[in-house]
Length: 127
Image (cartoon, one colour):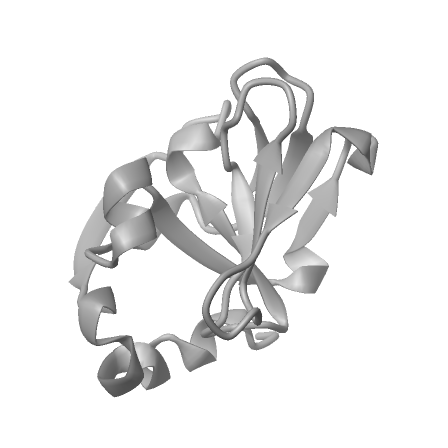
């Protein structure tokens, strides 16, 4: 299924291909817990940016591998390139305009990321 998504103001718009029934992660690391991000990790080939990149601001911290992408206008982070899957995109399910049939949320211990990141590595692989 193809989902449309955006930031709050619509300055960033995107499309992602994913199943009708989503399995996503809720992470307890500092940035995810504070932003309420629900993670849907997909291969880069399943993601398409529909708007110009001019409204995107990138934030990195710690190792600099993750590229957190925010709207310069409204401040919402609809997706980013995750450290666990630098070959994919991590979509905030809460930013999807098209809603999935169902969502199953699994807890992910991002506070102990180094011990658990391997559990996510398969999510950006092509099927």
